[in-house]
Length: 299
Image (cartoon, rainbow, N blue to C red; front, side, top):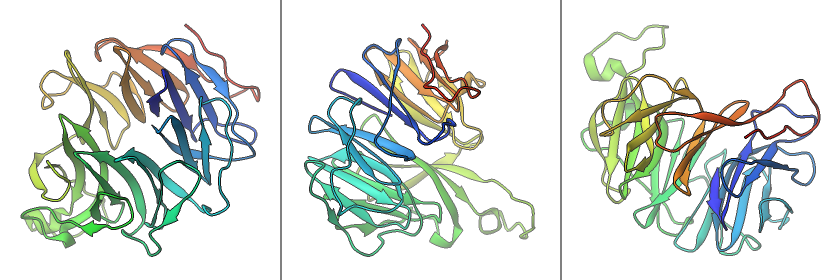
């Protein structure tokens, strides 16, 4: 989900359609209109910068208004996990952990070899890009091509089972990682999956520390005068907090949330939710899975 050019654009690969993902565009967060990308494709992420939306999934696609999309280059092919924009550069992370960069969405350069194992996500903040993987890797870069691996203070890299998500709040990076309980508490390994989520923070993307346990694994995604809106990284539910520490019970299902125009917008498996304060959410778009035609917006 991305905000830019007085529009919010949602791309979502979870909504079933005949051939492609559903892309939604809204100028006010209330009325949503579907836009069909070119060809049969699935999307996983979208970012805005340089007057351009860039969406990725089974390719890289660009649009100036979120409605009309095109494939800009034959140089970028593959499976892509996420895209971010910062420092005047789009950075695309592939599923194998390598990156591609572009200043205009047209011409792309590649990092070549993977910078992390099994690329999961990339985010920009505090003047740097941070990429992470499902294998527990973290890396930082200012240009998207040259990356440095980073470690978490006091944590053996072998203890990290996975990095679930990273966001930027109050100008700092915040992440949720799953730490192997066998290393942490001397618990004997078993076939049962044991979750031991902790929150990590960094001011620059290079020096990371453990803030403390985070169960359930709720990550702050956005902030307003009424507090914070967070997502449970395991159950994919919305939550609100006045201080970013004590969280409410689940307020709805969502995979992503952004703040724009004095409101929060969250997207779930088959719906879009809107909220003025992060506490009370209303559906503004519902997808009809029984229909092959584009879903309808509702106010």
